[in-house]
Picture 1 (spheres, rainbow, N blue to C red):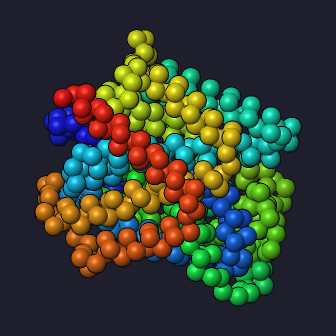
Picture 2: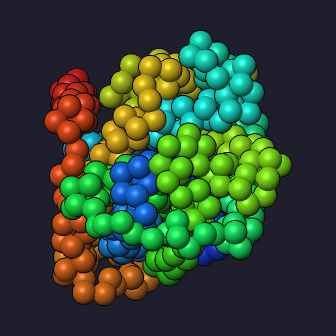
Length: 434
C-alpha cells in the first residue's frame, strides 16, 4: 500500500529517465528467458499456425499497454501498476495489486530459473540430472542472494554485466537464419481451435510480460505524460517483431522438430550456423537467463521488505544489515522461496500461474485507466489520450477474459488463495493499527 507521504518521498527523486532509457528498460526486462523455450511449446500446441498465438498476444498487449500508457501519464508515483490501482480505487485494491506484483515477480523468477538450470545442463551434460539440476539452482540463488546482501551496487553491477549481450545472439540468429529457412516448413496444415489458441496465448504472454515491472520507477521518469506512452510503443513494437521473426526462423529451420526441442533457438542456430552457433545460443541463453534472475533477485525482495516495513508481514523482513545496509532478511527469505519453487515445479506450471497473476494485474490497470480518466486525475501536463478511450479498456478486458478461459480450476484456486490470504493480512494489519 502506498503511504500518504509517498508524493513527498517521490519529490526527492531525480526525474532523469527519458523515452529511449525507459524503452530500453522495458525491452531488457521483457526479453528474458521465455523466448528461448516458448517457441517449442507454441509449435507443439499449434504447429505451423503458431504465429496466430503471437498475434493474439500482440493485439491483447497492444490494448493493455494503451491503458498502461494513459494511467502512467496520469500517475507519476513510484510503484507503477499498483500505484495506478491505488490512486483509482483505494488502499485495499492497491495492496492486492502490490501482492499480485510480488507474486508475478516470484513466479516468473522461479520459472526462468528452471530454464537457466536446463540451459546449464545442455551446456554441461553432467549437470543435467535431477540432483545436479537442484544443486545448480541452490548454488545460483545462494550466490545471487549473497551478492545482493553485500550491497545494491554489487547487485546492479551483476545485472548490467549479464544483460549487455542479451540481444546479440538473438539478432544474429534472426539475420543468419533468414537465409536458410525452408518455405515448406512454414506451410499450414489446418487451423487451430479457439481453445488451443487461448491456452497457448495464456502461456505465451509470459514472453511479453515485464512492462509492469519496468514502470515501477515512474517517480524517476521525466515528463511522464509524454515519455511513458512513447517508450511503451517503441518497446512493444520492437519486442513483437523480434518474437515473431525468431519463431518463423526457428519453424523454417527445424520444421516439425521444433515442437519436440528442449532448446529450440539453440537447435535452430545449429542448423543455420553449425555447432558453434548452437553453443553460442546456449551460452547466450544462459547469460540472458542469469541476467534476468540476477536482476529480479535484486528487485523482488524489496516488495517483501516494504510489506514488513508497513506492518503487513513480520517486522523482521524489514531488517537492514548493519554493515551493508541492505534488506538482508527479505533477500534471504525471497531466495529460499524462489529456490523451492524452482526445484519442485516445472516451467509451464510456474509460467501459467505467473501469467494468471499478470493478467489479473493488467485487468486492474485497465479499469484504473478508465477510472483515472473519468475523474480526470493528472500528474502535470496534458495526459495521454487513448484512441477510442471509452472502448479500449473494455476491449483489453475482453482479450484478457478470452485468454484466461483456458486456465484450469486448480490454477485459479492457487491465485485466489494468495489474494484471499493477502486480504486477511490487510484487514488484520489495519485492525492492529487501530
